[in-house]
Image (cartoon, rainbow, N blue to C red; front, side, top):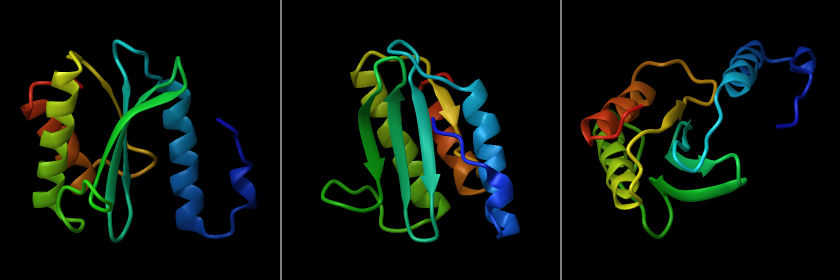
Length: 125
């Protein structure tokens, strides 16, 4: 990951989020047996990528937009649906454990609901 100098970011909230994102990515890495589940939450959509960092490949994505969308917008009900879809796809790929990357967001609300629903689907995070 290319590190940018977060001291040059003028907006304080973006600076905080970016600093948090860098410190998380320094510690979290995915492999083929235990991939990284990266949750991206914006004001309109949710996207979850399952990534194998050792090979540098994205295994699959689940999102609230596009052709194969799950849900329509950002709320806890759609976060539960996305988490269950991710857990089902991980189970179909014979993956039992994963590492959760919250992508610099605080672990509350929709971000926490995604992780909880993946755990309820039978995947250990």
